Image (cartoon, rainbow, N blue to C red; front, side):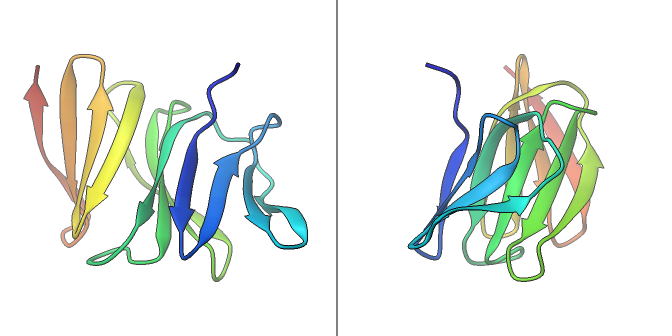
Length: 119
């Protein structure tokens, strides 16, 4: 089985399909939300705080941290990552991206990285 990045936001399941597009699972079936291919290692839902009701994507292309707004279907690159991401998590206004040897921390209020903790 292949790796399948998935997130739940507002009762809707979002995932990266086999063609590397961002999709959602709606009552009418699968909806392609963003056509351009992504090399997503992981996605997470922005619930509460900064970036509320948005999807955050740890993309190995670049590598980069991206945000997708499902309301206007706009994808924006927030930052270039120092290494390829393995995972992502968000709480309030902080995003943590797991890298192979460290955790990279990004402040959504300031729109800038605030540190890197080596493991």
